[in-house]
View 1 (cartoon, one colour):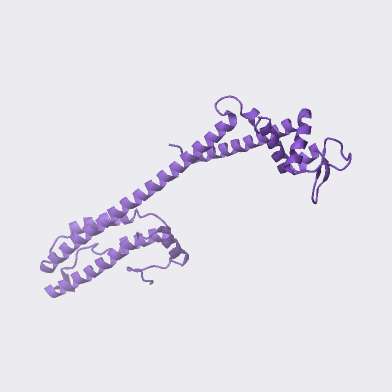
View 2 (tube, one colour):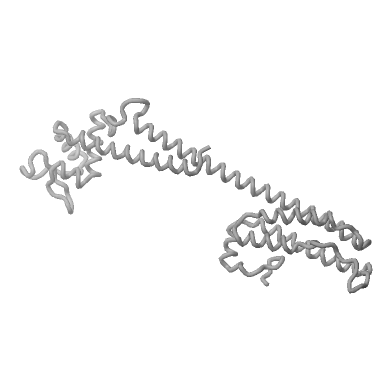
Length: 279
């Protein structure tokens, strides 16, 4: 597969080649149509298509034309070709087509299509390769984003599931082990650390990871007194509320990048609490 720098170089080369081919065709016109044996035919072609007039009387001689309008006047064929390039090329192309010599034919002779055909083919080939590469990169980025989204959603569900099991068990037994919850929390925190830019989204992901509940087990006692079942339930309910809030915050991270750019422009450097509220 082409690398981006290589593609850029090939595109520039193909574009330069097309410009060179166009320049070569222009040179062919000058050489062909201003040759001594073609000057009279060139003047007649220009007269027939109406871009010049025949000078009145003998002004300028047989090799002269009169250009109508402002900035016109009687000019030699060489002066006319230089000052009125578009009209000259139109008349010259008509002359060469009538003679069976299309513009640039001599430059393109030989090989299948000649230099011009090769450059056109190369240009189309490189352009097609560039579009293919862009499409592949876009698809890869989209696939990676979908994969990250699925992994993050799965980690959130697993953390919630294990946390709710732990909380239900804690209400019954304050000695319930906390290790499995901690492992699920660390797995979710690791995925949050991999959330891509923009910077405001990465910062929001970091804040969510730092504030996830259950970094430690819930207390067995407080101030030297064992917590009663209703007190442990109150502790568990508070964690459940935090879990719900952080679930919404993680889902918010999946908003498109432009949304986060706008948030950054609006001053998202100030800390944002869970649920998106400004502190």
